[in-house]
Length: 234
Image 1 (spheres, rainbow, N blue to C red):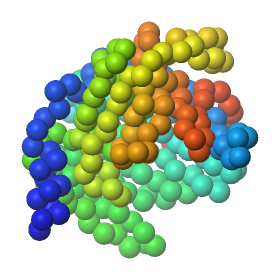
Image 2 (cartoon, rainbow, N blue to C red):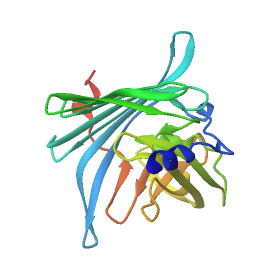
Image 3 (tube, rainbow, N blue to C red):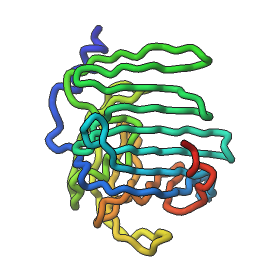
């Protein structure tokens, strides 16, 4: 009971600043995933990401797909997010592993419902809400929708199907020029994460709020690569 009350308490105070979906543009882009060991980095996979605007039941939404394939498909995970276009608050999520549905979620005004499927067995999900939360599986685009500026800091409540309730923390620590397949792009460096002490440096363009990648001690994700095997997945 105490753990439930503590989790609900995380939601009571609404964040002072929320994401603005108007900052996000429709895109289709490929990233290369790299692993860093003993100071050496090597590519291990790709991430295919698409963002599209749509309307569902008369309401404007963003459809965001993030599909990762690592080690030639040995690990394959796809997240299909449906988000409120204005705030990026989640409407639904379908998470698949190796082409099979793993988690299915629907976000309502006062609860999250759905199911987790493991070994062919479905376990229901029913989590009460007392305030707004964002999707804990969507990082870069959530941070890109914030009003980034030198020195700005943000906190944003989330719910994630493995971790439960938590708080995203984000801090703009500077800017740099990022080399991309389209040429050099100026970017904010945003130190952000979902857990204390486990932050990544996200690179978000200063113009257009494009997610350009991230880096951490363990590895990185950068624009470029061959995602042709993922582009046609429905």
